Length: 354
Image (cartoon, rainbow, N blue to C red; front, side, top):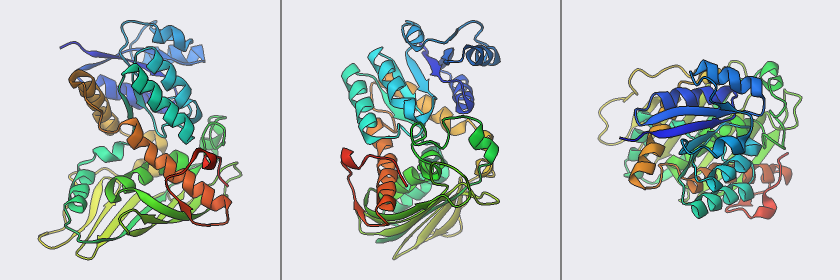
């Protein structure tokens, strides 16, 4: 079978996870990388055995006939720019979270991919966990009865050194926010994946510890479209970080997740507490470089199969957009003193946060 050949755009920390994922999929092949800092691109190419197959100029890499797909691993506020360029060059796209930092830019990405007839998928690796799939099946098949509460708590630690490691971090212009837009987007996508869309949100976002432009702590109350309520928390300033925890309760039962481990599994017909096998500790609660490539490998495999089978990927652009919309609604509510904000949002509400 002909392999899907990938180029990687942006050679920062997360790009290495993408490279390992590509190299772990039999129908994928890593052939090139690109970064505006040529020395970084060259070092990255050496690390992954690409020789001199590196680029400083994105258009030059996108012009290559031997590249069918790209991974967008640049700062969040540049995702749309690079994804649109890739789509216009006829390349399929796997875009790191968040898709971008405004709804307008995300919609422009989606339109560009549709116009070019290329596949575009977002990265939310928590959806790939077996534990997530079990919990989602329990929720969607009614095992919990009428859904009442869906909570998501994300308590992370990020050091001063982490924020100083890139001048784009914790800026409205390129990061689009703080604890929610960068780290918390994963958990908010997860709770929406399990509970369904949000209808209304009220929130407070604050800078409580770090001297940043953006929030390091946020708390929101959400009303889902199905009538259930929930609490959403996100922070990067607690010690020790404890990662992402989700708990969903209905009038017949409760299920819970901590990282990739099922922590609660109680409903009629469930014989015992059911755990995810050999669950790893959530190292990314304190160290973003501790991320394993397993979930990204599933994303790469899915995008390759979507290309081969001419189908939508598991997380198409419109699906990946939802978590960003919820975050933007939380920011809008905080700007307005915690007033309730209805979803969906319009572009006029698409501004920065606190």
